[in-house]
Length: 132
Image (cartoon, rainbow, N blue to C red; front, side):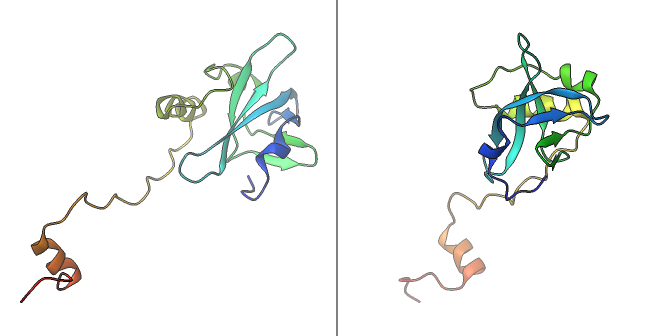
């Protein structure tokens, strides 16, 4: 999926499965917490139905429709977490497993919370303000 698309522009678009069958309409878009990139969409599957979460990464915006490269049955069986709330990491993990998607690579390791003067000297040279 193009990452420069305004996520608000996806709301209200028709969503189609890989065969071109209509699934529903994009109801909400969920951004990745770390990158701010659109990652999931909630698609309203019918007038009295629920929202099905679909991954945006393998999906494509074609004209006025969101093409989702999965079968309609799989999409409709996606875990239901309700809309309007933040997706937890556990819920996202469930969605990745449901669609058989590879988890995104972890970001760079976090720096240590604190370093001793000896570690800082070794890693960064002499510590500023420290006498010889």
